[in-house]
Image (tube, rainbow, N blue to C red; front, side):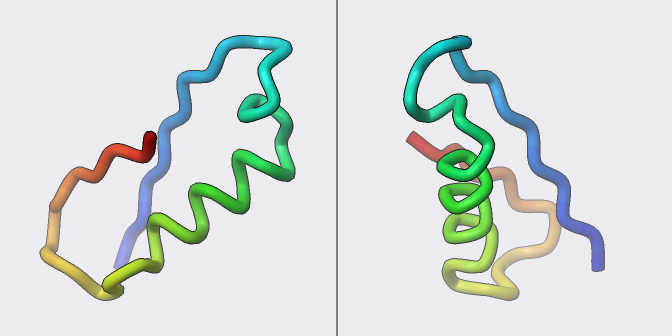
Length: 44
């Protein structure tokens, strides 16, 4: 199994803080785990 996460956040915004970004990514990646192989998700 391989999980890949890419982020694109504006510097200085709350979402760009590592703790907030990591929490959002972890929640989104493991929601409905294991999900469809190769599926791409976007996190608002």
